[in-house]
Length: 498
Ligand code: FAD
Image (cartoon, rainbow, N blue to C red; front, top):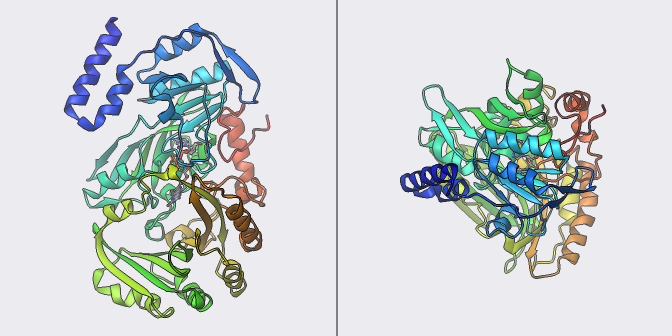
């Protein structure tokens, strides 16, 4: 064992003993590879490339984390992403444990001309965090959250998951907006915008960002905030992974009672039209502390129905008054109202085996649930009752809509709802019919939308660039400045023009 290997092994053992949950980190720190052959890979443009054995070895040796090649026992787990239909094989996976590793990986990819994928939580539905033949820069080994309760600030490492953040911040009675599934990555969710049940109260996740540390395509470390590199800071808030890899996020936190009101309301599908009309009327005027998601649902073994999930984070003594319109929206099949720990609720949507289910997803921002849109929703939801499908909406508005569309790169502040259509199937069954149904239904719905959330999907009938609305020119200027060779292209890509 050489001296470096010995030191790393000793360090890893010490970390592992002190924090049993750091086993993965210990394994990552512990291992050195011997590269035995040249590596075949692809460039960003898809051309074949052979990288010399010695260059790969030097790269592996430069990391404090580990470099995985196909055949390594950890390779298969690392290459996987949440969407079970994505099955790609990177030529190399760099499991980074700090910004020095990220810099090494970016420098290596740039000098070799490699295709690059950046993975945090692996939730990109279109599979942008993995690739065939390129370098996956895996941040999932770079997790950690540090809270400064006095300053109401959280420092979140670039590979952290939402659950890491909620868990740490709420232990101080503090919180910021995070998405609805705890194993979604902070990295992808934040750079794309960040919707969650507290968004109407505290804004999108990006609206709570104070600063970021970024490794840009030239391998430089940059701090970005309203004061320092403000152009980069603007672009990272909604421009996705186009401008660099964020190694640390600094978030503003808000005091919030850990116990919130978690409520479900269900109505017969026969009343869908009137229930949605009632919902449309009161949802836009709801207090910021109320978030309502939901819509039409199909579940095997029961009749289709309309279901809403409401989260009230305001004063408990106002709960009945605030939820009254939902109670009156139609004939209730079921109502469940419970005071619950926010962190527990945030974990309840977690799918413990996401790869067992295939999902087809479409989404688009709506300005309002107009009577015409409601008719289209209801008329088209003729779903086979043995399928699992949703035509729902994640509520927007409130604090999200009070920010100017050009204040950040995220350009959909006008939206009241992010409308989502999904249909799922067991992975061993044929999805053709389900996908055909969803496509036809979405073709009717999409004309009622005004763009789409790039974090949900990257393809739509709305051309990608139109989706950036009036922010596009500024984004292209930024891309030309920070990533003129388009090293970071597996994202809602802004192509450089230089
Ligand atoms: P990854 O697949 O790891 O990364 C996606 C992309 O993000 C990468 O290709 C890269 O371009 C970029 N990226 C990741 N990390 C970094 C980083 N550190 N620096 C720079 N770029 C980076 N969205 C919401 O807003 N609210 C929700 O409630 C919500 N719920 C979801 C639930 C599920 C089950 C799923 C699958 C998705 C959900 N989403 C939600 C969408 C989610 O925001 C996106 O899928 C997002 O890309 C996930 O981030 P990730 O880090 O897990 O993704």
